[in-house]
Image (cartoon, rainbow, N blue to C red; front, side, top):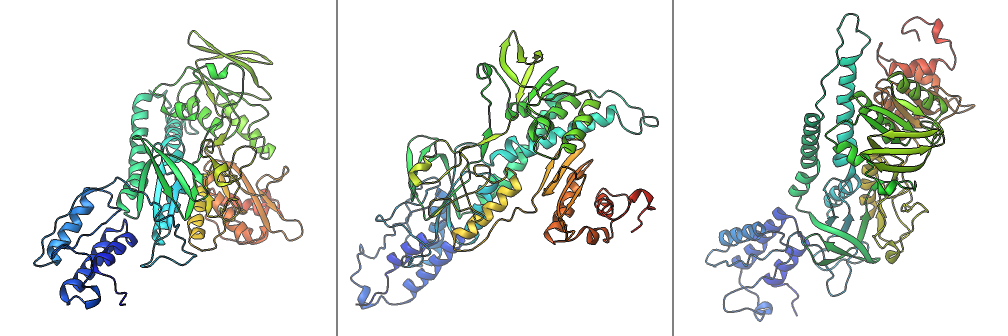
Length: 550
């Protein structure tokens, strides 16, 4: 018997294969309609189920009424002599579902007419977006699941708003004090935090729409499902929809990219108080007269200095010292700079109890009580993995709840990948995005690893802190491998240190020696020239060299 498909079968499969791709879908419509209308029906297909001279198409996956309207227009244009009646019933962001209990797999034999890989992504931040775009580019059908604000931490409550606030604080500081005050009159700036916040939020909204929402809206290969996901097993998710009800999502591959949230230490009394995390601090429309900060790393020091420069009296409580995981010289340099600006840094100090009464925080420490109008808790971030039912999919986590992944973002469960702050990888958005892209490549049969040997990191204090590669307690800026002289690490504490660290990262990646770096040409009076000078110190006393001497 002739196995040539009827127009109904062909169109149904064509729509399924091109789901979410409007233009390819319409092109296929034109192709098959042309075949159907331009030729006589073969005897083998004349007994296909029809009603009179009509053909009924059962099409699933149209995400809105406009999809049906596009189909209707093509039918009316191409099917001369036919009437087209389209029932415009669409499901919003309809996800991939099980078909006869069969799970599609690109590595196995695909269903007839070529079924795309079904990819489910939990989250919508840097890792999730990078993976979704790459997977869609590779031909996958992607369902992106987000329970809250599209864009994740960085654009909404992290990198973007914090850097805007930090830059505003830097401008306020320069107006108040600069190296040129003898010739440029300094003055105390008038600070309107409400207006600064409005400007900050406008930029956040603009960035979120331009780099996340707008891109998702314009990519028909990606369906967005608003709700909270958890694993049903190793091949499916249950999503509790924000609008009510549940939806089951089946997948060939899944990426977990749920990010992290501020960690809260178990200090007695703390949870009963209206403390801030970085989220509330960045959203505050006022600058507290007295701000206490518990924490000693990136978020704590960045926001502490910003609030101080915008007019607050800030006290930092550090369990050990600032940046205690880095070279001691880094913490010492930043502490000295903070104290010079009036920020109080209490080293080796912990709060044993926190109380709040009459609009005031009271922190009990080993050195007495500390009182403040606001309290910022910035003691790290915890992975958002609770509630995912990872055990149902046999996805392993470490004692901190972070998903364990290898260099290819594979978890302990077949077909399930993870990337970003919810994993045991460094919590930087550029690491998350790189991991998401590589995860998507590997989902479709590729082999892409994430090499973090030359990963740069920047803290946006003033002076900035920038590091890459290995560190050494005695090193001031560059670290070399004994014997070979090859660069293996760099640390810098300087204004705009973040602008020079990538050069060091590239030098490490290229396996350059300190002498090879010292021999390069660097523009005079640039911050990056400091790398050349540091490289020269391995063999010379740079104090005895003239400007630019090599």
